[in-house]
Length: 434
Ligand code: URA
Image (cartoon, rainbow, N blue to C red; front, side, top):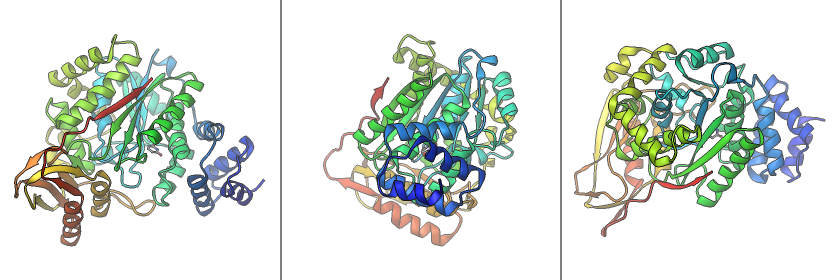
């Protein structure tokens, strides 16, 4: 068996055997197969797809590339969530402490930015000192002591996903249903949670553009999770426009802090209540999603979730003063507000264009290992359905240099579509798959 034959068979649309998938994934993880062959293989999978059996083998092989945690010695029931990737998606920063403050342990592995979508790990790293590279022992200890832990892929936990993820990010191979399913579910299986809520995004700023594709992804992930004895539910939500207002690492941390203080944009708060509520409901702590959402709303407004957030971030090494004074988080030197060039109803704020503008400003990577500029990004002031007058604030750009700022201004203005007649605000939650 050799890598070239396996790439060729996938390129030609053949179904790979379990042995071939294991050979390729383990070989790449150990460093025996180089990046260029793994990139060619990912591209072949992108074009040819995988059967459900191949995707399941890929997921389990990636999950078992490192430790697979059994958390039951620490807690009888641990919950987790994962997003398929979107723009302005800082949900974990709010949802993890919101659920954990109810005594329900949250143990989670997250990822870095992927393509134009941001990643929780990059956002968390914008907080000085926050440690995302935990060993298995550290992960377990955090969970036992604080009932909350968020780590990146490491040499111990899903190392195969760590390598494929960084490669896909810069080889235009992110938007592949089996590669996304395997990436997400391998992390979830390795991290050991009993119940998982999948936050599946649909639309321009998501990797799945149609409800049908998003549903197929959700069903595959739910079936892989159930196959290994986990409780799984998927929430499909709209990602044609960014979630909340902030796009960019430190800006998103600030918005999460606002939300944890009972403020924050309405759509983002509502999304957090649904995802957290579903986690609590799956764990059997509420009889219905409505009841769970009400519990979650009370904990946001009472400051209970905020207290848990501070406990979590500081326990993982993060600087408390930056949480209490968010102005001390990384900030860009240039800040400019772009105003509406005309009056009218906002018909579209293209999330993919906003996300790509964020990457252009330095909030994401173009090549493996590129440094991130934590302070840059965009505040999106308008939502679809809003009526604006000419000159109203549309975006605020946070940039590191004038050239990037001016390019961002052009790109963002082109990302907005207008209507002279009223536009209905689109529903945010599309459907829930149990
Ligand atoms: N999140 C992941 O962890 N992996 C993907 O491929 C997409 C989103």
